[in-house]
Length: 580
Image (cartoon, rainbow, N blue to C red):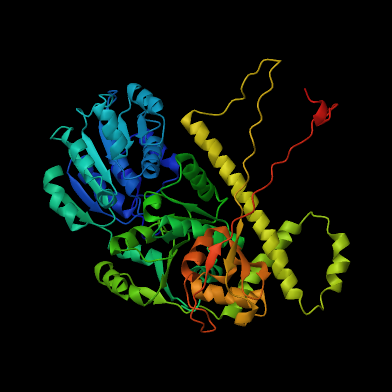
């Protein structure tokens, strides 16, 4: 038996119905935290439990609470969580455990139908799991009754504090009976929570399990010193090629980074999608379905967007940037190495990160392993093998026999690498564009369904013709950068110019398509749309390489407006002179 698991659920003397619920979930043995808290919770003791993410804490509080729920059809348990994803996950786990015991659990969170949640409450929900904002809203509308709550649970209490929910949490707890039981579960225990315990709990017992050696052994912490001669995105790409994660989360500190990385990684045919706070509920749910079902390999997220996310089988966590505080690092890396599985946390490190690394080692005993990346040539070989395998899979079943003799005749060409590079870019860019279009359309449909606003075809009378709306043009994937550099500045081809602009702007050369127009005193370079404005801001006003006193002019070239197309109507037309 894995060291994370101890004993048997038989020792808890559960009802046959709850035992069936455990079997439905495939749980055979309790985890360490479940063993530690079961008896104190059953004895109605207030608890503060510091337990690592992925240690089985949801079942740890759900199981003993379910043993105390009575058949009375009113709210008896209130569980507050920081995000809708976590609220849904806790509600699903609790509902499945209590299914055979006919215990009613409902999730209450924003971005979902009020009517469905109100109906669930009126049907007699006994356990309420929700986010503080929506729970408070329903309470203030006199829809949710908190007067008979026997147990209140704060899940991920430290995250709720960091997200500014504490005022709402203390308000809601004040509406419940004073004799209620209060349980706080948290991966870390900030001093602010410790100071606030007297306001919300009665002589709570503290159980600290996060620093347990079992957790430390389940996650390997790897750091790679970045090659600062390359862009950060390329450093990450190389780390992904090196580690070959089966399923991973990449953590960024800003939503802009998540979107830029998604576009960059897709260019190299990595199945990556961004998840950030600006996305609609429908789009978020679609991305989560894809990563959980295995359709998606890599999730790129901010801390806020990823809070409460539980992804089974997550092999790796990558820190594109280290977080601002040690507690966030604990939450991030706790997404892998869950329930006794082994996981790897990979961090890209620059000189400025040494202080945070020291804090993590001192506060949480994180033992880092510094691993040198292989030479670029080896990484590129790995990348080439992966893309060659993908191309072979894509070619399966496609009729290409007419091209084989031509391909064989080209094998000796000195520019074969240029031809292959162009073909790969074309192939993978088209595949990425199709996937993005399909994903957006699906997400839009999900939003319509979740909001109850699914579009229906308008009904028209037979004599009426519906007015055709103009089809919106898709956003261009590339833009032209205008720059006052050319042959007179010593640039003999577009590649040399692109390299120079890449160095000035610190934008990875992979964002330059290789297309453009090189002239004597000015030129155009084609780049990915998402980096065009960044290049403009970085290059405009920079000194010229030739040493001339005037500075560079750089701008995003505007596309020529299309001329309106007037189609002649069929039929007889009189000359203008004969017009009435």
